[in-house]
Amino acid sequence: MALNNDTVQQYIDRLKKESTEAGQHLDSAKAEESKKAGALDKTRRWSGVLGDVLGTVTETNRLGMIYLGTLERTRQKNEKIGENASLSVEAVKILICETRKVLDCSEVLKGLIKILSDRIDCKIPSNGPGSILNLLQALKAAMDVALAAIKDAVNLLLATYHLEEELWEQLAGENGTLKQVTDMHTLVTDARKPGVGDCASCHPKKVPVFPMDDEACDFYTKTKHQYEEALEDLKRLQKELEKATCKREFAQARKEALDSALAAALAAKACETKK
Image: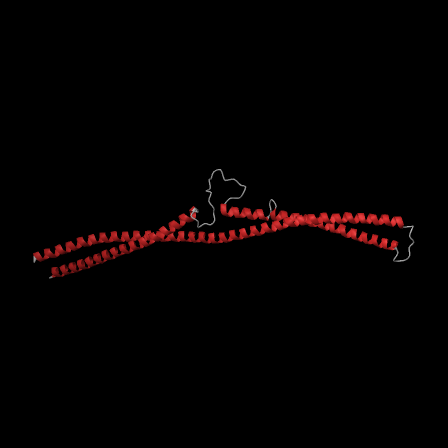
């Protein structure tokens, strides 16, 4: 009977030892599983941040390219409109010159009519509405009306000329719309205001800002590369976590089985002792 008791005790001692070792192995498996889960969660959050940043950059690039296209079309239209405004200025100048010539010729004609009228004033009797003197008087009156109209036309053309010059200046002058649109295009593509030198304390790369998905854009390229790496890490860590979980479940099952066996052995020993 003592031999049997010793055998049971040895069995119980072995179970206790194996249970302790299984507990240690389970703790180690739990720690490994927790570590892998933490790494996976951290990488998942990081990939989410990178995905959001990359999505924002991609959307910004899309809107930026639309904006650049709008600026370029606006620049082309302003260039054409500015050219038309310049031609309008030249056309009004020509009209002013020609109208002044007409004015000069009309004033000469008025003077000639007066000379003619003065010369025949007392030599040809007036014979009614159709007489030459009456016709000359009517011609003089018509010339006065014509001269007044021509002078008004010259004044209106001068006013138009100033307005056309102002329009051209606003469109294509030194600080006109065309220059502003061109500068905006340069600011968006090069991230620097035209005419302003680089900061002495920084050395920006001579690369265009847009398109942002170009290889020359360090930020986009780096972010995209980091995001792709994070996705690969997610796949790897997910597999590693699954393996760690399997190990933990196996270790837990073994520990529970040993604990159950130990409890049964202790209960059996207790029953033998009572007998």
